Length: 72
Image (cartoon, rainbow, N blue to C red; front, side):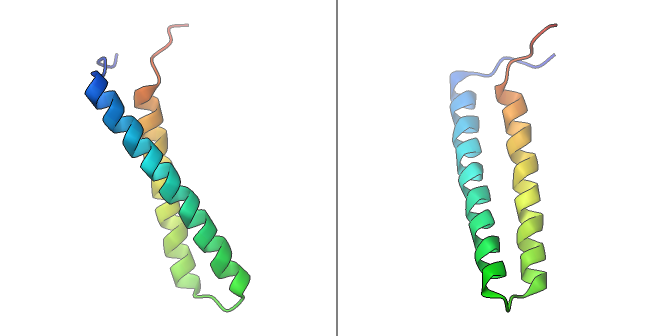
């Protein structure tokens, strides 16, 4: 069972969630732009994709903390 978040904790998590969503979207655009150029550095794209996956995992973890437990 999770502890109830205070208003300050919830606001901090929501702000971090929002910031990570923006960074994830920006990485998506950067990867697409690099792939469009045709002559791209595959290693750089792999690093960006890895960072994007890390962001996705962190966003999911924060979403889980923000979503209240529902007893079925």
